[in-house]
Amino acid sequence: MSDPAATIAPDAVDPMMTTSTRRRGIRKAGGGAVKVRVVTTDPARRFRLSVSDAVKLTRASAAPAAAALPSESLICLVYGRLDPDHTRPTISADGVDLGILKATCPGF
Image (cartoon, rainbow, N blue to C red):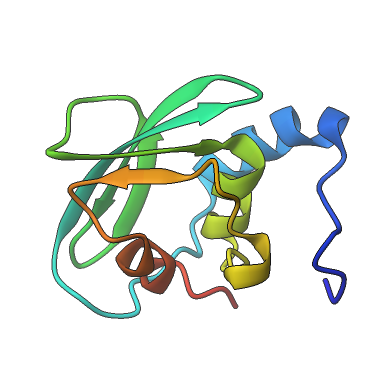
């Protein structure tokens, strides 16, 4: 956790993606309602992040905003670990501020 260069082992990313999408501890830290289509790479997956009174990460469906990021970064986001040292330049967001997504998943 204290090493900014540390990454999730490639063979652990796919199982962690499955676990992360089932995680019930995601909580909203602030801001308004958000719906974002999330597209990941390595492995390639599509999700919908919906934020209102609760936060849900479900399988893909349409949304007014979009974010594209490596699967490892989505895992970091869900667990509140997507800090400046772990935000890769390959992350893009269209129609939503990445800071709002980070605030949605503040960790534990």
